[in-house]
Length: 165
Image 1: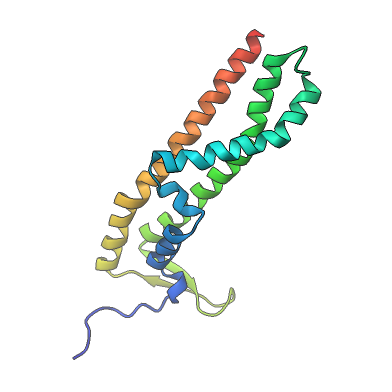
Image 2 (image 1 turned 180 degrees about the vertical axis):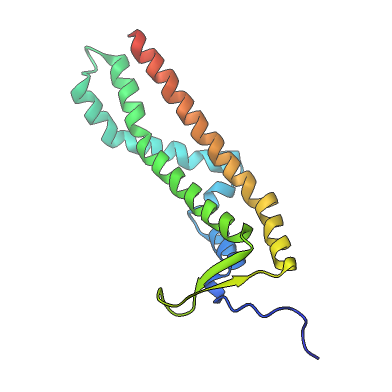
């Protein structure tokens, strides 16, 4: 008896569902799927580690003895670079997989960059993939967007405080 399921010509590692599973199992990208404590902990750790570079630079610009508030504000802002880059990488990875799952037509490479093909997903596959986007990936992206807004807000508060010093 023959199966009625359509044969997918896309190589296994390029199939959107497998790319999604691979992202969920990745030590880095799984960070965005953790509970709030597990999600915030690496951000705070990266920020604290970034102080190792940001503090000496801020100290040269704003000596602690003469201008402690400018030192703290500039050091805290500088220390945000590494967490922002990590969050941006998380966001871009999840957006890529979201787009691959959401699209009705998938571009793939059979053996190299020179022989790209496209495959149109059957309705069942498209519906499954879009459900994954709706219930699994959108909350992750919303959390990351919310985090970026909070960081932007903190920069705004820092800029206001800076202007009053």
